[in-house]
Amino acid sequence: MQMPRRNQGRKKRELGPNRKTLASYTAGADDYLAHWDRGRTYRVPPLLREWVDPLPKGALILDLGCGPGQDSRYLQREGFRPIALDGTWPFLAHARRRSRRLSLVMADLEAMPFRFDAFHGIWAAASLIHLPKKKLDRVLVALRQLIRSGGKFGATFAHGKGEGFATQGWIPGRYFSYWKKDALAQVFTRAGWKILSLKTVCNRERKGRWLNLIAEKA
Image (cartoon, rainbow, N blue to C red; front, side, top):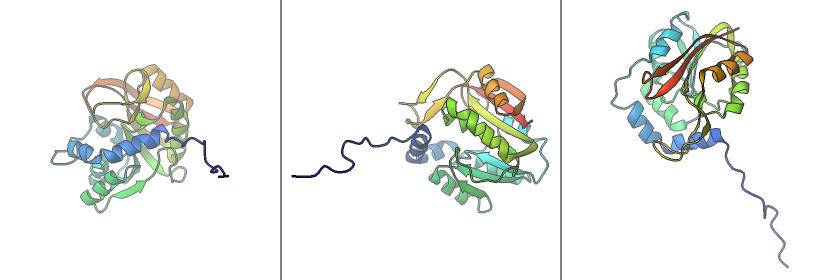
């Protein structure tokens, strides 16, 4: 009689939202790079200028979810020391081709390999939007530990209600969470951040309605 296999009947463990999103970005990397960083003049995001202005030259900055590294390259040209972090290898490979001097780290937003109080500032342009809402509290607490007292946090969040996977459109399979201003402010306050600015903008850094946030480690 044939013995049953040990794993027979077990369900294959599914990837979580973060890993599914990274897999979708990897699969769609060529389309993404063609849209964002090939043959295209870089326009400095207005929020990035506003957020980085009070930081001292030479400040160590974490670019969280850097993509192909456009913002990090700008920060480096302006005299700052950016650490560009992303979980999508093709993006980091492209960033390396564009700049040999840029410091690159491949890591997960939920498991960052840095010591406490390391950074003067953290920049998160359209990266934390891929976290489920229930995980944002914990990630913001972890980020607060990485930044120095008085350090500045700048981020953009998709405006709206709800969350879930995009099933159609450009690069499907990515997870998105949408926030209203009051709810997002409550999460940051609970995590120990002092909000300096929180605005709803439309078609500014990106198409559509977004929440632009600047906060400080309380």
